[in-house]
Image (spheres, one colour):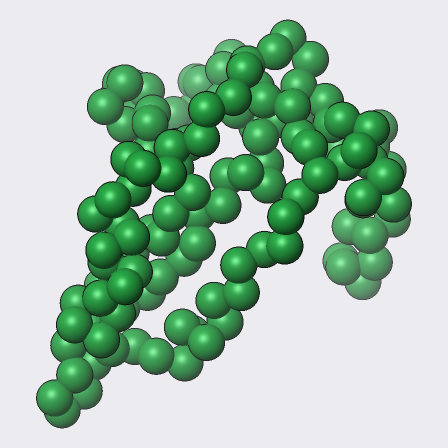
Length: 131
């Protein structure tokens, strides 16, 4: 039911709430807004919590950061990581999942650069792709 409701959304039904919005800023811890942390918001990288790896793919939600959303590239499928926890008899996740740890270490190489605009709606190219 929820997937159908999401699929039925039209551009006018979706409200982007950029992090600069006062409604959002009032619930964000002030330390998170320091420049040393805000670059991480714009990184397309692996977020690692012990053996759990999530792909932080902000290039798919640029309006949330005040950027214009263009046509999307295919999402990285990391479903295979869900079946691996990196723990066990002779396994250790920083070793078994070394590729992802190295990706995290070089996260500053993957900071997206984009213009912040007053109306961060999607491009027509994105809307064509979406429909």
